[in-house]
Length: 192
Image (cartoon, rainbow, N blue to C red; front, side, top):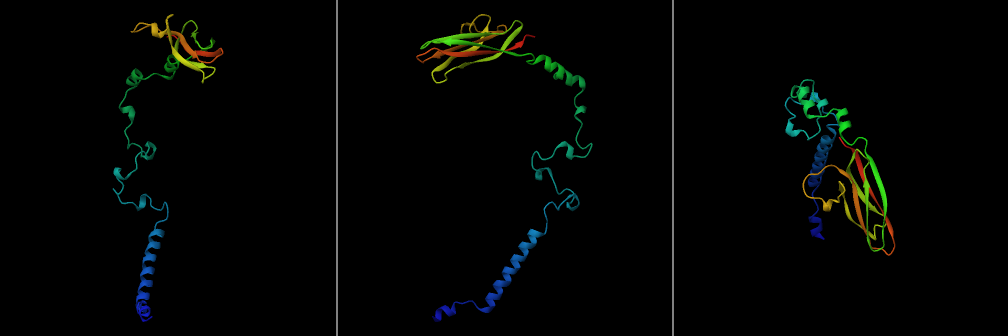
């Protein structure tokens, strides 16, 4: 019992600990309340305080800089250089896949056999893509999906350069006990 009484802190120690907690708590509150959110602006910053290394990447856009600070890109390229390397909107519209059509054909794959079909592009068009879609994706498997070059399947075409594809071929293996349908599509764009 005497020992417990002896381990109690002295009144001076209690006062010192309370004073320490108040002092530390006061500086923490002061640090938190000293700068309200968005209170530091241009006027509070010293010249040269913000450097490129301190700015987060991709946060500054051209409209955040004063006029004349960033170089004008028209100084680097003349209109002749730009027109020589870029298409105008009209040229782009004329050139890229305008007037595309999709031709879809259906075919039958006999039970336990392979069915084939070809989607042919209209005259004056070329196949720029295509695909095959079986009716039953658990019992049918696409065995070929390729452009039709002339009148020849891709596998039978000699290596090298050829004219535009005129359509799209598809072959499907039907592993079911009944006849099933599939479709072949050709995405066709005007030649030229």
